[in-house]
Length: 105
Image 1: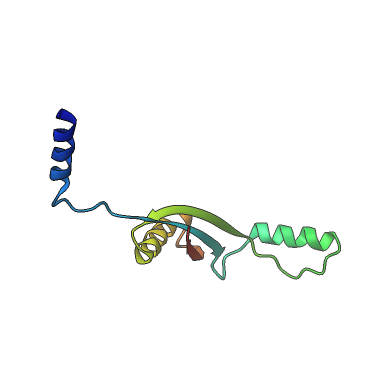
Image 2: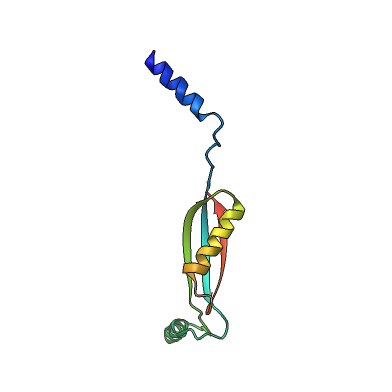
C-alpha cells in the first residue's frame, strides 16, 4: 500500500509542471580563413615547398577547420550559439573570416 501511495504522490506532484525542454543534437563544421590583406607565412612556406617538389602551385592559403558537436533547442538557437562560439573563441575577428555548416544528428 505504501508503494502505491508514493507512486500516486509522485504522479500528482508532476502535474502542472512544465515539461522538460527537448534539445536536438547538432554537428557543425567551422571554417576559419585569414582576411584578405593579411600575410600567410604558413601558406607561403607550403607553396614554396610544393613548388620545390615540382608541383605547379601558384599560391597556398592556410586555414583551420573545427568539428563542433553540441545541443540546442532549435536550428535558430544552434546557429546563434555557434556564431557566438566563433566570435568568442574559435576566431580572431580582427584577422579571421569564418563560415559554418550545421546539421542535425
